[in-house]
Image 1 (cartoon, rainbow, N blue to C red):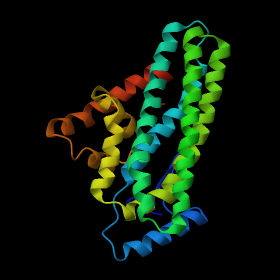
Image 2: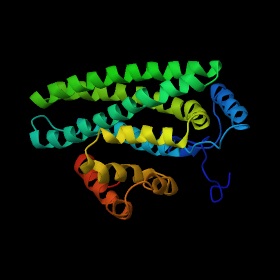
Image 3: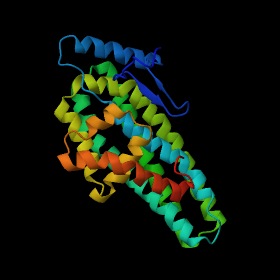
Length: 262
């Protein structure tokens, strides 16, 4: 494929393990869903652009992949270091929680009403994955509390194990969404409905974190999609955020991971 001329579409997904875009269906399930999308799109409005979700997924998956090592590097008794890493961990867990809460409230119920019966099992599966991820987040929260109280090797290693479990579950969930669910969502939702999902996820985070969040997105995100994600923002933030956000993320990455380019 000539990457110089290819423009990513709703069929494209970011493979975090291989650090590259995959621009074709990769499973039988994905192929059947794309076939369904093609049939539905023949007589419906143009597909909604859902690539902003891939940008969000890419950032979250990267950060949760890096977290176990960040925690493991904290030496027993290093209280200040533990506070820095735990702050980032808590921020990411809140971000993931609000992201999934928006989907639970606005995405899955709407899709379930509109998708063909054969595709409804995908909604069942991703909803079940959310339940598992919620449980994993609770396990991480409990392990964080123990680690913050003691900052010792035992509680640190327990937290590292819980984070690795969370990452494995998240990776499987996001890949299923991107390969099989997002193409279907693009066919059955309106632009306004899709925008509301993103707004719901963002509403749960303090506005002061916007530069950091956008910097996380911009680190590996498609520049065209990133520009579209800010199109509804007022003129001043739309101009300023892209300029300052990378610096906010670079500063946080240096604090947590020891490098501006983790």
